[in-house]
Structures are given as structure tokens and as C-alpha cells.
Amino acid sequence: MTLSGRPLLDTEPDHQLFAGRNEELYRLLGLVRGGVNTLVVGDRGSGKTTLLRQLAFVLRRDAGSAPAFVEGRLAETPREFLDLVRARLGLPPYAPIEGDLVELPAVIGALGEAVTESRRVVLVDEVSPSVGATIFGRLRDEVWQLPLVWVIAVTPDDAAALRVPPADAFFEAVVPLEDLTWEEQRELLEARLGREGAEMAAQVDEGNPRRLIALARAAKETGIPAALQQEAMERRRAAVAQLGRPATMLMAELESLGPVSASDQRLLQRLGWTRSRAVQVFRELENAGLVTSAFAKGPAGGRQKVYRPVDSWGDE
Image 1 (cartoon, rainbow, N blue to C red):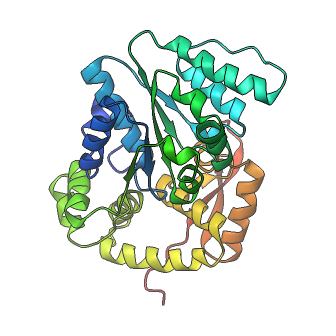
Image 2 (image 1 turned 45 degrees about the vertical axis):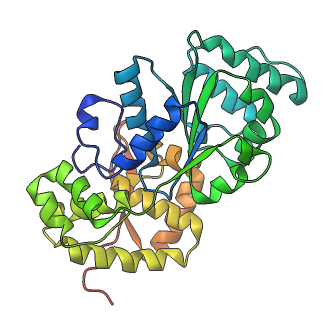
């Protein structure tokens, strides 16, 4: 998977490919070991999921205790979020209680059943602003009483709800994921492609890890130099931005995953969308000439429409 757009997993083979965010990983390790609740803030494609997975790998390898990894974007309500956390901690479902004011504090308190040692770590890969504001804001004191250390990774837009009172006091540290420096870009591509990756890094300057890998993958597949790939990608990005945030989000995932259908579960989970929403935004991109589609055989044997970005080499 050297040039795959998927986030690295918390496995030994994938950990060997991790590069470019070592400073942030070491900082997170220190914060978690110190019991500090932390926000990780980065744009889409900045490596939030990969960073959390590598944090999980190192904690499990060095301490022998597996953190709970929660895909928070799957939860639309505070109760759904708490149920996800409970499941990832290895606890059975919690019986429903009537009344939000009674139910949520009770469910939060019951999470402590999962802790047999001094404390456990919960890693949350994105959480909706409304859910985050409720759990870590309105119910902050109840969550504080748990023997849990929380690391929450969110986009800058979603972080706003967690950086104002009362939630801001819960998170004592913030780890921003800035654009990769040129040296970090070289490290990332060299980890994936060896010397060829280092040579490719010298041709471009793309600080977003997801887009950097997409550039390298496109250069390998087409034979077109990475520098020209980047010029085309920047033109396309400017055109997509004119269509609005949903189109920008979808194109970012398309560049990461490669050709996908509107029913691709990886795509829908990353975006937190329904299939019908993906179809709608794909149609906007296709009408603007920014993606193209073709029918291909689907996983179940039927035909499905697969979308891919339109190449624009040499376009002005």
C-alpha cells in the first residue's frame, strides 16, 4: 500500500511507513503519558487518522495496553457517541434510560467500568461540533471524573466548538498539524518509495500529506512529472473551491482514495454523508467538468458508476 490514499493502520508494517509527523507523535506520547486531554487539529488530509493510529500502535507496543479507537464521525447524537466509546472499550450495551438529563450522565459514569488499571486512553477520530460541545462542554465535569485520557482529532472548523467555554478547559493541550516542511515531505515519500521518493520530493512542494501522496501516485501511474501533476491539481482545486465546501471535501477524498462510487463505504464514512448526498455533490462536480464517470463492475457483481478527477495537463 506504499502509495495508497488510506490512513496507515496501527500495525508493524504500516508503522514502518510512518514519516513526516514524528515530532507530533512524540509530543502526543508525552501528553498522553502525563494524563493530559488533548485536541489534535488539522485540515482534511493532514494525517490526523494516521497519527492517532500510530499513537495507538506505540502505546500498545510500549505499555501493553490498547487504547480505544473511536470513529466519532459515525455518531450523530451524544448517546450514539457514548455507545461507540462504550463498545470500543469492550463494554456491553448500556440499557436506555428515559430523559437526556438523566441518561447521558449515567452512561458517562458507566464508562469507568472499563478501567481496571490507573487509566485508559480513548482516541477519537473526529466528532461533530454539536456532540463534542455536549460531551466535553455541558457534561465536562462528568467526563472529567472518569479515569480516561482523551485525544480528539478534528478539523479547524469543528475545533471551534471545543475551544470555547466550557469545553476549552477540558482540553489542556492542542497539537496543530501544520503543513509538512520540505524535509518532512522528503521523509514521507522516501519512506514510501525509497530514493525515487526523495527525488520526487525535490520536484514539488505540497505540505498536505494526502495530496502529496496523491501527486506521487499520479506521477507513477501516468509518467507525468510530479511538478506538472501539482500544477494541474492546484488549478483543479481552485475551480472546485468555487463550488463550495461540500465539493471541496468530496474532491479531497476522491484524490485520496482514487476512483470510487457514490456508495463506497470508506468515502461515506470519511465524509459522514449518505449515498444520496454523495451522488448530489458528484453531479455538481461532473456538471462543472471536474470529475468524469464510467460504469464498472461492482463488488456484488452489478454495475456501478465510478468517479475520478478529470486530468487537466496543460490547461490554462
